[in-house]
Image (tube, rainbow, N blue to C red; front, side, top):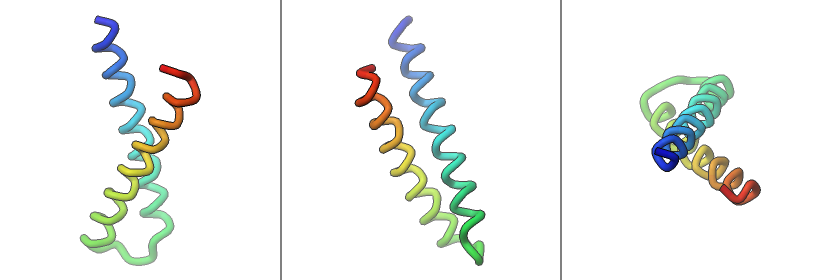
Length: 61
């Protein structure tokens, strides 16, 4: 039960980071086309993964 809740929390944290960073990317670009959306989604995913990993490294959880 504890592992499942931890996994759900981590997934929710990742999605929150991803959504925030993807919106920031969309605000900062001038043209919105498919390639820009794909690159933004990928980069936001990598940055969200780094943010979750950094929090886990600092808190030890």
